[in-house]
Length: 246
Length: 246
Picture 1: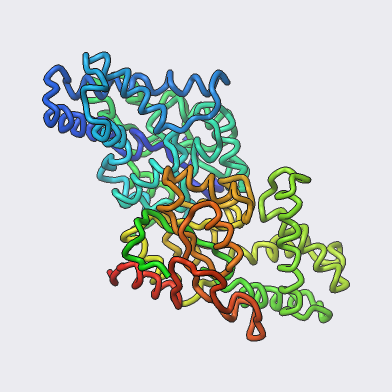
Picture 2: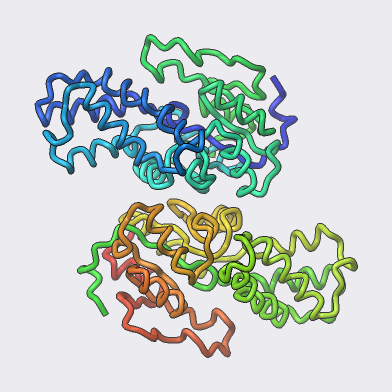
């Protein structure tokens, strides 16, 4: 592991779903409320959340492969939601349209891990901080406004017009920041995201989130490469980067 | 003037140079420091700032007309800076390269009008607030970080890949915000910006900045159309939109 003090960083960019916010608990609780309200007893909220999220990567692969023009995540989430409802035997026609629109916005209303806001706030004092998420700008904006995430700007797939782990997502973000990739650190709970960022020349910080997928989680429990930084959480990252409490 | 209470607004987007920050005073003082340091006695800082800014619209017109692919404002500012230096008889080779790079960043280091930060802070409590400036993302980010502008996201020309007053700059911003244009209010000190926003269906708020171009200013002293809102400054806008102090 590189000594953090040796890194000449100017910006930190963050994966968000899983790394900054606990998407699974948030989606489960909002699905549970939806199922209760509309008396959809066939829906197990945790299973529903996992099936919905299961469509995430395949839906972006349509764009990454070039088979589909860039389409923002809210639209992909909505298509995936309809597939997920079908899996649970629910027809979209049987639920009020507005309720589906609202349920799709569950991803805009996710709670951060407890260390995220205080950690980001410390990091912001010394570095540019921005999401580099596959979530679209409005999604990230609503989430930040609700949760108090203190981003300096909202970057990511929609700004870059490319979904991670495509290199364009990282390289265009560096271009927008007008920084060489080595002055940017990608922060993620996912080894694959860091591997893609490293291939583009970015620095890497791994933060394990061992309950992102629930207590039976089997992947991303440990760093799989020698990432530049490994920290227990955002506060640990702030500490390793010399960002003292305000 | 429409009664503000009748407007169903979700987001306010802001012109920045002139409307939120006092670009001219900021550029003048930084040019003065540059001229002093490099003993460039032929440079009158106020005249230099006005010539530099004079290249602003023509440089973007190259992009708007399609003669040039989208090029971010930092690059256009740099080209305009070199033309401006030539006008004042200064060759770029006679000044250290780093000093020119730093001078070009003068636009990243502009002070807000005194009402901007408190006004935006109040408005942020009720609305999404974002710049819709021709300044690029990194420029707006640096400015916001230094001055404490509390944007929810940084939108504008670079995100939309189009320079105001091209309709795409407004329409793509509405698309990114996932809002119909009529739920967005363009806030500007410039009648021409509001006219272009209105043609795209946005609501409009005029804030006069009668010393933007110095005390001899002759344009944009008064609203030239019946804008939806006219306010004395950002605090007045917050008041008209029912945003009370925190």
